[in-house]
Length: 321
Image 1: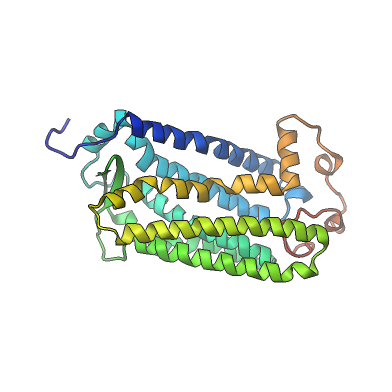
Image 2: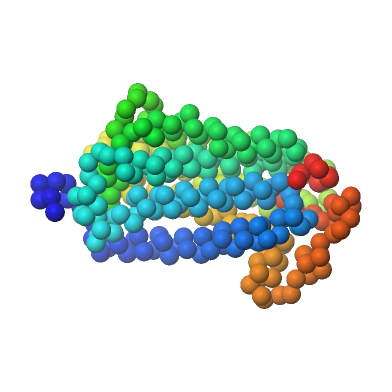
């Protein structure tokens, strides 16, 4: 143990906070796993054929990777029985944790962009635009994070937790300002998409109106989460690095990030009857209904039999697959 190096101040009370955080996250991760499982099993069925589900699967995978990368470098390492050992062993700049540090920031950008994609998908659905949206989710974050791949990183104290810092090999804008720009842009786009969907409600059937109102509520909640995330990034960027408020913001932002990362599967569970039915069938609580177990063989007419309330206009063959 390095007696002259920085000291970890984690205690049993901070451990309790970490245990609570993980206890809250586990049900959402299980729900993500169930959704991914039923999508892989039933993705060729008409019930999960919508491009909404495809984008949501991508969003789910991004959220899972983001949560796990953040948990590894900023949460698990902060337990009192590991904190000092981690600080002594990895408290100097090196490249061992560079890949996961890059993944953490890359997926944070991708997370916001995937929320934009979900909302744009609900406003206007085209076969080509789905692929453009998916490519954008993975390509746009690269110019914002590539420099992290060549930057050594180290664990630092963020009393009473641990954090991670990197050494700038190239001159680049700060990570906080980059996240602030992306989160702020995502918030604005989601808000505009919600207004556009509201304008379309008059042309929808009553059932579709009810479903779209529910989706708008979800959209607004996601937008609110992104707004909180942008606010946190602004505070991190502007607060003095040695102030108590700065460290408090760093160590409590998990509340906001977990809301943005772990809320989506619950919204899908509440709003999608198909997902609820598929999960119930997967868990063996109900027998598969004919529409789920057999599907609709007439591919030309399948859209006449199914609407899950997740798209804002009628789904046409080869237009939303």
